[in-house]
Image (cartoon, rainbow, N blue to C red):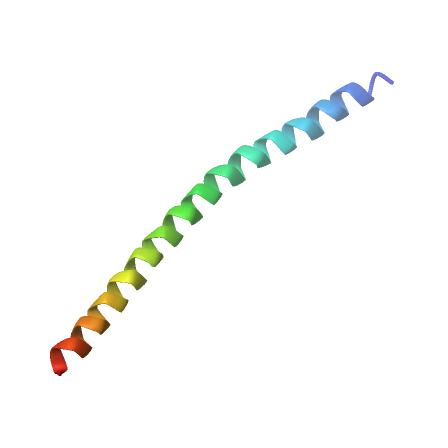
Length: 55
């Protein structure tokens, strides 16, 4: 029984550390996706402007 308490503490600390690490990583991924979306919107706008300018 005495050995279970440190084991539970170690396992819970691993889950807590993983949660904080992956939450920061997810924020970075979300920012990168937003940047890509902005780039695709700008590319679409440039493409449409080029089509309109040709005619």
